[in-house]
Length: 148
Image 1: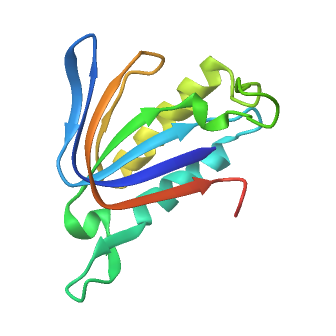
Image 2: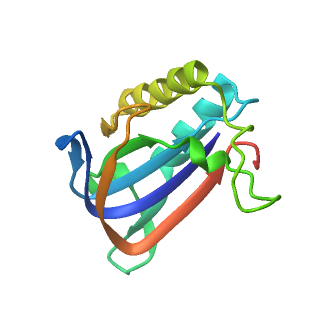
């Protein structure tokens, strides 16, 4: 499983012209599920994302977590994180997980974050979405559950 975490001042996601999720300070998390992923990968990403200490403390050092600052999560499914661009210019998505498994693990990731006390909003799985965000920093972290 892969996650791209962006620290934001605010963010929202729209589909069909309707805002379906919005947050203030926190993380936008793009989640991609791969062919070989298991629930262990989901659990790993839940702990890693919710525990990231990428907010500044009183000394301007990245030392505070989402919980420390009262931040929120906006989680978006993103199968294109598994794009293979080795050959040619048209990416292959053969390594992305099947839709049913991906949706299950996406929902499991969201519920895992919520169980740890994180305010979590979400996009709509499989829908075309417009995401608006104000990047804070910018700080962008890439996490791959297979690279532990």
